[in-house]
Length: 504
Image (cartoon, rainbow, N blue to C red; front, top):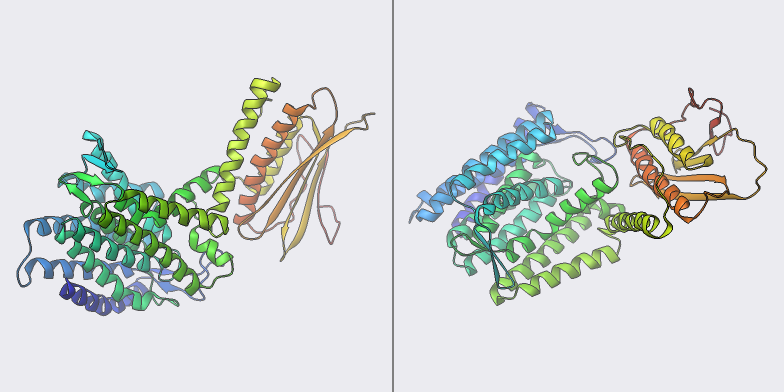
């Protein structure tokens, strides 16, 4: 194993400069955009090609070197070479031409099929000593796990050295777990992967001179995903679920929270954002090295707990440690607190709806469901006016801006005469991850319809539009919007700047 580690590391050190040269020559570079990609200059991709070729060399050495390889090692090596090769090629194309998300997912599923066809599936899982028979469900579960691991490492790869360091620590822990479970062939391959990543890290640590790219992050996810299953098998096709789940806890939690965040914020799943764990730590004021050390430490803690649980035959230990790590991160507002808040808002909205129906008896207004996920600020404003009017509002105000551009105030007011002097007013405020804030305020006259159930509906609508408004602010330059025309032209609708009260 040590021979394989040293040889693979040396191969990675030799091949990485070659991959960097080819990436620059073929234009596969990651250019800064000032939003998510904050590096000072373009950085070449395709580092995963060097990692993959180094792993292939290590597998060849294990199988055809002195002593040869066992049948189990040879079979697993062939499957990994094919599956990782497919995702590596797909990643290279994605690095160069930015493949469609659905097509990319299809390629990932195709890549894991060799493992399924070769019989590397799970028929039974064991957790806390209780076995669960899966039967034919083991096949889709295996595919789901492998594709999930590929995307978890892919989404995590957003900072210099991060995916490489996480992959290295994960591979080391998997090697120990595999040896403890009596799978030396799995441990040998894990050591080979660790060697390839150790050599690549010399070029990938901050400031990185080359990135893994999708060609590398997906290869790491594919190899780690399959090794985590094979290294944790109690018997043939019987998996102890604790070890792979806890070893991959940090990348998987980051992926799950990304799905929750994008779903509850009205964003498409494949839209990139700055809500991942490394972005949160950087926004908290940590530099790249500090964020890398924190995340690596978290992975080491969860990996060590999975290893200890395997050696001590105590699954509870690993789950308790991982839960404590997550709760601590949320309490420190370092990671996960935003997603937890969104879940609370969603639960509150559901309870509000239930209370209206069961207790208050208020029937919802026929608010039209609109496609706002990709709408621009002007479209969101127009739709918001239409919906808020149905709820009896006669005035709507949106204040939004940031420290760089100042604050804009957009107002709409219906031309409606009334002798009523009692008015209700509700506000909802949100702040985007880029520091842009928005506050939406709706006002209306008190009447027989202005009871608790009605006001809860107003809150629901304002919260919905505030999320989309905040999302739109992060995606387009802060404009000075034009006044609305058309069916609401009779109403007052102007936009002013706090330091310059001019009508748009």
